[in-house]
Each structure stands twice: as C-alpha cells, then as structure tokens.
Image 1 (cartoon, one colour):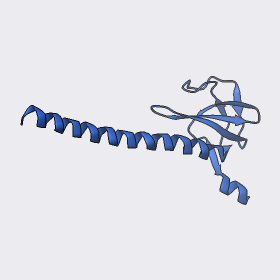
Image 2 (cartoon, one colour):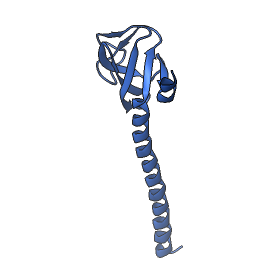
Image 3 (cartoon, rainbow, N blue to C red):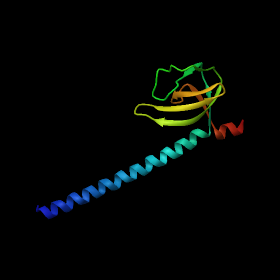
Length: 115
C-alpha cells in the first residue's frame, strides 16, 4: 500500500471515529438535560433517619442536616461522579447532598398528582 492510499484510509477511519464520538457527545448532553428535568419532578421521602453531606463528593456525610424518617425532600441538582451520582436535595429543615436515591422512596410527578 502506498503512502497516498494509507493516508486516505487513515483519514476515513479518523472521520468515522469523530462521527461516532460526536454522536456519543450528543447523547451525553441530552441525558444531562433530561436527567436534570426528571429530578425536578420528583418528591423523595426518607426511608430512615439520615445525615446529609455539606458538599458533593464528601462522604461519609459529616454535615449537620439530619432528615427524619418519612420527611420529604426535593432533588434540585445532580452531579454525575465517576462511581456515584451525587444529588443535592432540599428538605424542610435544610439543604445537603446524598448519594443516589436508595435512602428515599421516590415519587414521580405522575404518582404525586394521582394522590
């Protein structure tokens, strides 16, 4: 294979790679915006008493905000971390961070409107 053909093959492969990477980037951006929108339409009810962290990525939680069992919170911001999704929640007695939603019963807006 001569240099011209080799360069053309490399150019085509690079173009295909850039095309697929741009599609992945579009899906990541779409997921970011739709995930934030979904979170705003949820109500989270604490399953047990829990402590919220003052900052995302700062666990175990060392904050002073204690959420009692059965208290409601609203997710207001999500940061996608390497290992976890950190969610900032606003509760009646404060604002803090939690990992995911496993400590909460999640009620989506369709469920909340039917109750």
